Image (cartoon, rainbow, N blue to C red; front, top):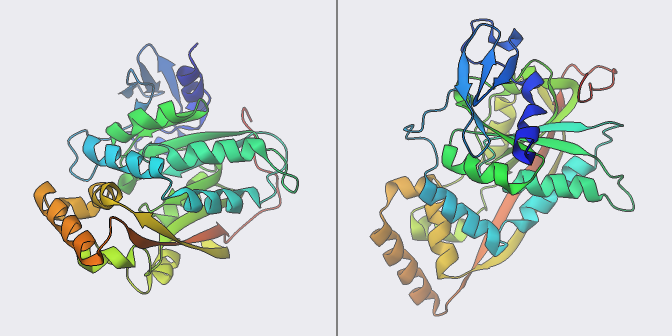
Amino acid sequence: MSERAAALDAWLAYLACPACAAGQSQHVRREAGAVRCERGHAFDIARQGYVNLGASQKDARADTAAMVMAREAMHASGAFDAISRALNAAVSARDWGEGELRFADLAGGSGFYAARLLDSLAAGDVDEPRVQARGLVLDLSTAALKRAVAAHERIAGVAADLTKGIPLRDGSVHALVNVFGPRNGAEMRRVLASDGACFVVSPSNRHLAELVGELGMLQVADDKAERVERAMQGFTVQGRERCEERVEFGEAQLRNIIAMGPSVHHVNGEEIAARVASLLERAGRNTIEVTMSVDVTTFVPSDPVSAAPKKMGA
């Protein structure tokens, strides 16, 4: 069995059929090139190894292959390394007990954060013990999931429209990760174990502040943190850390930061190039210093229980 097949099979007991009226109670199992629920609904397994639980490849909300390439280029540049480290620190700071940790990265894209989190947990350090974990990346974009399942041997991928629900069984994961993604607190609470935790990374109103007006990017609301909390129905804030640093962006990074996100839908390639050239010309240099600023918030269920989380195979 290949590593990708094994990574997906390890999650089959925790996936839920999105088509069943009583979907959350329906197991799925592998059958040749698909998974099938107890009522017969079948979903294709792509040749890359992820399973499609209802996402449409024609959905206009999904990241395109070009957007995924731009995001991967930004990740490779190191611009988001500090954010990744801050997320890893928040997850590692929690005592996960013994056994294997299951976490799902909602709207996890190409698996950048999930892969680094897996490596960070496995490495441990002097103060934090090593944690063996399995990651599940869920995303609407099949272009992104093709990359996610190749990002780490312990990542499985599921294509799903998370606005319609999370195709996981009740209480099936110990941790949820949400980086710059949409949030449905009620669904997140349903799939999270009562003694689990959710880690949300959201931009502050200082994030990319130097570029918002100059490049026509979407502005972050001043009350972003409060909006995030309101969306997290069923959760209580346990902690919040601000991660902020200044990063040098050259022409390639400036183009890619637009091309990777929703702002790309409002401007074309020629307009992006013209805005970037104008910004650098006014700056009088080949790079510009940009603020990367996010809040990493740890949420715990409002109704925690003392029982230990269920481990893999439980």
